[in-house]
Length: 333
Image 1 (tube, helix red, strand yellow):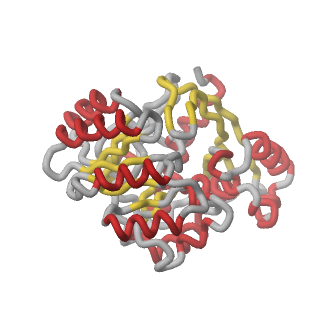
Image 2 (image 1 turned 120 degrees about the horizontal axis):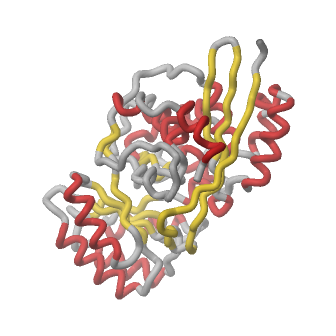
């Protein structure tokens, strides 16, 4: 039997639309790809976000239709260079057997924008979470800073906040936030991508002068973004969305030198994409930060997912198989 590819699409509606500095997101579209050959069966996920520089959903589907008829396209590096999400999903599916053992990972809880973060924080604290990511740059600076002070007041000893602006700050807003965050070095893990892509030099200078760690996210997924994975290119955290950066095997090589800086983050994929991403993290001995995958319960549908929990344990990763999700997709409601 030769290699055979197939795929299924999905559309998932968020239980509550996701509000970020980039706007409101209510429906997640993507694909699960399946490969079968003499060695067995493998699954990968293709979950584009064009706003982050990936291919469109339509471009991914066009490639998958061709791949279904011609399996040799899985090795077409020229075509896949322009299709990073397809490159990730196909390469993950081709890794039929994991080459390393599965590991446990702490999870950072996702807090919604605005005052809803306060009630969500209380729920997540009671569940045992210690790291929290809050979307900012959505409302007025003064309003969000007042909410931030309330969030900090609720944190227990050891609790840490990650603030994600999705590149939506002005320089004035960033300077105002840095003056505030300087007062809470124990509670703030980092400020994520406060300025737009192209303003990395300004962010680096302000991080150095303020002492507040600034993480890159959108910058990593732009043209030339892979350069930030060079050792010494960026001193702060690197928020990596594996599903958007290309072939899984090449990503392992890129991340090994900077693994201590890496924070793995979700693109609101299914549990298939989560496992694809975690198999990369499993191969980074120096990876140590909480993963940003508190996203699997964000949808109002019947697709199987892992429970929201402050830890994803290796034993739990074996219970929900990709085949379970594959069989559910035609009846997704």
